Length: 193
Image 1 (cartoon, helix red, strand yellow):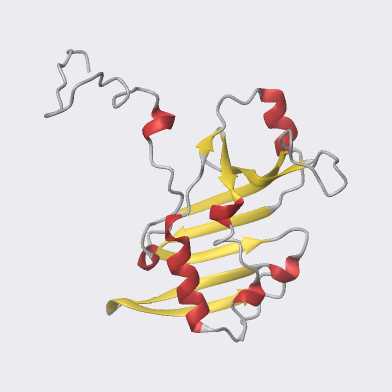
Image 2: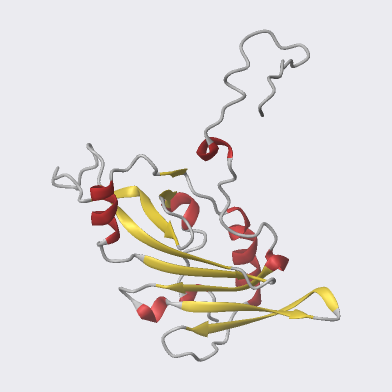
C-alpha cells in the first residue's frame, strides 16, 4: 500500500514484524493440488525407471449428482484398465488432499538449477481438476546432505529425505519431502486387487 498503517493486535505486547512480512514465498500457499477429491478429474504418475508401476486414476463424475463419482485405474504402460480395490482408491484420494511443498528453492544459483534439471527425472505427475486445469510436476533427486552416510560410512549421493520438483508454470524449483509425497507416489500395484 502507498499509505502507511498502524497495526495492533488486541492483548499482544511486542513487535509485529514477525507477523507481517513482504516476501511472497513465505506467505503464499504451499498446497499443490485441489483440497477436495471431488475437485479432481485425474491423476497420472509416471515412474520413468519402472514404467510397470505407472498409472492413471480417473474420477468419472456424474453430471446429475456432483457428489457421485466412479473410478477408473489404468496402466500408463499398456493403457488398459485394471481391476482395482475401490477402498484403496478412496484412501489414496483422502491421503493426497494436502500434498504440499516444503519451500521454494529460489536462492539456488542458476548453475545448480541447470545441473539438477539435467538429472534423470524420478517421477512425472499430472493432476487435472474438474475445470480442466492440469498441474504437471517433474521431480529430481537432491544432492545428499553432509552427514547422510551409507552403511559403509560413505557420503550418499542423493538426499534420503528431500527431492526437488519443477512445475511447468513456475520458474523456481520446489523442495519436496518424501514423507509428504510418498502418499501420492503409490505404484499401480497399490490399487490392484
